[in-house]
Image 1: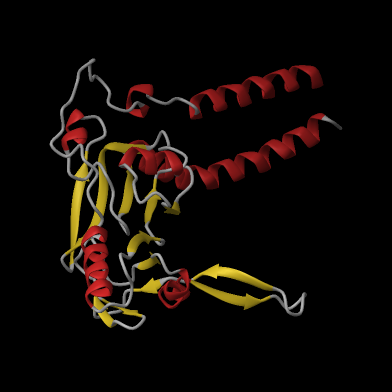
Image 2 (image 1 turned 180 degrees about the horizontal axis):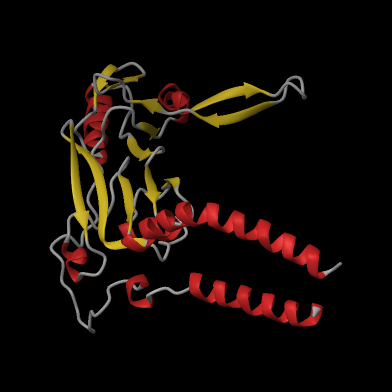
Length: 264
């Protein structure tokens, strides 16, 4: 009697697991149905980032006189003391914060408007100002955005905020860094939220269409938000789970009673 009951219980568990694991693999594929092709995109060039409020920049200045460069490079780093080692200092990146007015506080030059400009435009402006004011001779200016990041949410394995040191990331790379989409992701309706000219721009992107490669939203910009919606299977699964939870708990209780009676 006991052995028959154990066999019966084993088959019940296996059947339940098989039922719960059924997934349509077609819906889990990227670019389903796209054939071999060559795509020439008008947006193949990586867009130059435009500086906005709350961006943090590192601006390095160099010239033939290293001592004269020091005041212009000091804001890029700040020293902090570690309590465990008296006198021990660690260099920590600080940079130039673009304030609410779109300006940075640059040594000697004072408040400099940078919001709405590209890095190359800022570099040319600073180089010109430093030269014309005879602060440095033949200065070389380099600029980087150190808080370039995108947010990935929804049906991905690891929702997260991703920092991008290279200032270059495509939508597919961002999804890969978030652990890829889950099988419950709605691949034909990925939401991208971007701030442009003080407005929130919302675009829906179809990962099953080759038009993605022709889209100006293929490459991401700093502070972009990606939201992957759940498909109908996820919603129905969640709904079924809520409906079945009381039934499963009751069944487990009854099963425990039956096992107790059989084992007596």
